[in-house]
Every structure is written in structure tokens, then in C-alpha cells.
Picture 1 (tube, rainbow, N blue to C red):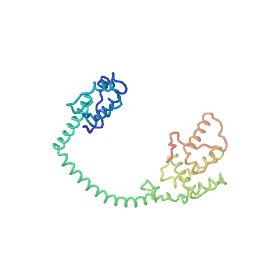
Picture 2 (cartoon, rainbow, N blue to C red):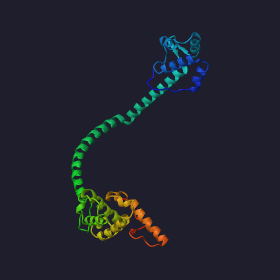
Picture 3 (cartoon, rainbow, N blue to C red):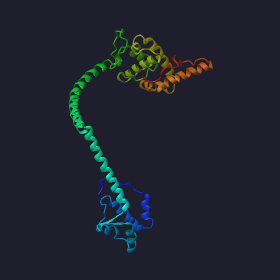
Picture 4 (cartoon, rainbow, N blue to C red):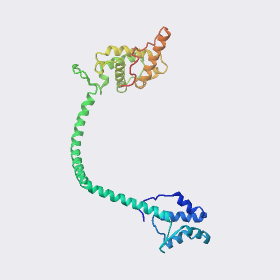
Length: 289
């Protein structure tokens, strides 16, 4: 009996045995072949079960390809040999692995490794609890001061990440936006964050260091923002968008403005009133921050 879930199937041997069998006899042959996985020797009782629906002629066909085993039963010789060969090979491999484990001290190493792993897990639990507490405090500091000055010589530390409505340049851009779109239902909690993000997007477009955008770069940001407003107002698509949409569609907006500038430059035509183009570097990164 083999514990393996399969055996090596040899099509040549199978066809040799079954090519002259009737369909009913071949079905019985296939059933016996599968039964070999449980019993190398098929008993007389099992054989009668498999052949009970066969005629005498069909049963005789089947018995011609079976091999009698010492009066105890029958088997398909090549199937039994294949199962035994696979079983012996698997057993040999198992013994070789056990031998190698003993020779290399594998079992002792495994025991030591398991003890080390258990100790390590205990240490990690203690370290993890301290680390999580530390990271909670660290995250609080980072969230409050997410926008920090990257220049050590610049004393101003920006802490507007969680209160963009209080940023002076945001308040100025809000006034500019409402002057262009007086009927826009401005919401401080909803529209202030995208305005602050637009400030940084413009700063990135103009290649300004991030920590300079809110102070030293305010004038440049306002000039470029006005150009954006002048472009957006007559545009049939962008004029109906919210501030959040301008942030989401930033690459499309800038590419459209830049393409308009390229067309105007090539045609040497006069610029269309009300549609100034944002002056920028052709190699600028138009992606979001």
C-alpha cells in the first residue's frame, strides 16, 4: 500500500493492455488500476465486485491482462511495479534526509533556533510597545509641523498643515478667487486646503524651495495664481470647477495653458484678451506634490 497520492503512468503499458479490450472490460481495468493505490494485490472479492457487470467473454478479456499473485489475488503488473518503485524512492529520500540532519547537527540547531526565536519574540513585544508609544508621540509632532522649514538658517517654522485657513497667502488667494468668481460658495474647511495645495503646486512649478513659498514667494504665487484665474474664467470646462477640481486636474490645467502658449508663440499672433498664459519652464514637473 502506498501513501503517495499518485503513481507514474506509462501510456505504452496501458495501451498494450487495453487496446484489445471491450469498453466494459476497459472500464473495469481502469477501476482496478485506481484501486491499486490502496491495494497492490486485488483480492478475489474485490475482483468480483469490479467484474460483476461483465459478460463471461468480457471477463475473460480482462483476466488475460491481469497477473495472479500467489493465489492471493490479482494485479496489473506494470501499475504495481510503478507504485512500488515510487514508494521505495520516497522512503530512500526520507532516510537520506534524516541521515543528513544527524550528520550536520540539524536537530540540535533547530532546537537552539526555536529557543532563540522564542526569546526574540518576547524582546520584540517589549520593544514594540515602547516603539508604538514613541511613534504616537512622533506622529503628533510631525502632523502639527508637517510643513517645516528645510533651511536650518531660516528661523520661521511653518505649522499650518492642519489650519490652512490661517495661512496669509491662502487668505489673499481666497480674496482673489472670490473677486473672479463672486458667486462661488466658498467653504473655509473644504476650500482652504486645496488653496494651500495650489500655493505649493505653483511654487513647485516655479522651482521655489518649499519653505520659501509662504513668505518670500508670496508675490510670485499671487502673480501666477492671477494668470491661472484669468485663464480659467473664460474656459468652458474649468470655469465650472471647484478649487478641489483645480488641484485634481492640475496637470491638465497646466498642460492646457502651456499648449496655448506654444500655439501662440508659433503663430506669432496676438494673445487672446482674458487668456494670459502661465510663464513656466518647459522642463518643469507638472505632476502633483
